[in-house]
Length: 164
Image (cartoon, rainbow, N blue to C red; front, side, top):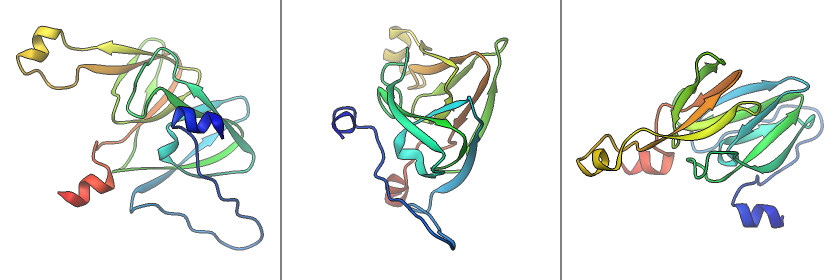
């Protein structure tokens, strides 16, 4: 509880047990499933987690080498085996990452990635370019290694989208 309060990361949890069906949703966001195999781990911002199997457990960890990404300095890292239901605005895009092809993603659009990937921040614009009115995307999250990254196609949250 203390770690959750200090980091701003963490999940408000409700356990569902018994026989029957349970339906989960949150603010009309798109939901999708990521399956975690034994020995693998997946890091995700807690705000994107809808529900997960009891065979998975999570720990709040610092995002290594990434500084302040879209969700912040901390993420929830899931390990064990089972399925985790995630949510995001728009249909998620899964991008493979290989040692030969690192991937650069917008820090505000990243949902989660394979835990074994190496993360760092990549500055895409010089200070002069930003002053002259560059693209506004000064920094991206660089992912290297073998795995995958999940991004959302929109930076709008349902609350922002309703205002438009």
